[in-house]
Length: 229
Ligand code: ADP
Ligand code: MG
Image: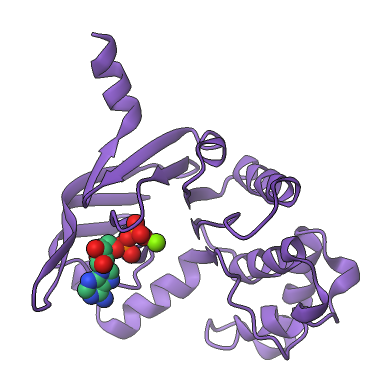
């Protein structure tokens, strides 16, 4: 699903900042991978590259076998819209739009026929357990409900890859647990999931954990194996 071959990113500066040192990575379809690392270590940079929001300055990124570096901007945007859903720590909902409208707006540019959008948005909100709150404004929703709306918005285009940047960072532990359970369900349904987190308890929900330190990405499970030798 995700294949990095020597992928790295250096911000030009000045001074230039190498946020991600060239690395290789394979994330298979249906995997659930966690990414940990200190603040400023390059986690969001990694996620932005994986999500086709930023292009790497080194190496090649193949998404589902497609060499993304060879795509025109419009084709890369279309690929992102079809295959990738994003979930962020601070939800990024429009405050004056209802839950339904927030999810609907995600479909304006992804080619979903207008007539089909409302049904798709309702279905996505139903999927995250918010069928009864479709008309609520985000300001009237709890943090956990807001994150569910954001997840519904991420799911509405039926992506194959869900990228989450600290998805439980703004939630209390009980609410976080309910969001993590939702991610577990999506994973069980076949979704490929990448979750960035500071929290080892969140990271353990994934099948393996990648570490980033000072822009160096490593597979911590591989480190563990090496340590046992
Ligand atoms: P994390 O998400 O792990 O906190 P980031 O990926 O956001 O880390 O940032 C990694 C490094 O890249 C940091 O040193 C940060 O200051 C730097 N950085 C991030 N974005 C930019 C940018 N647009 N221009 C220059 N440097 C940046
Ligand atoms: Mg970050």
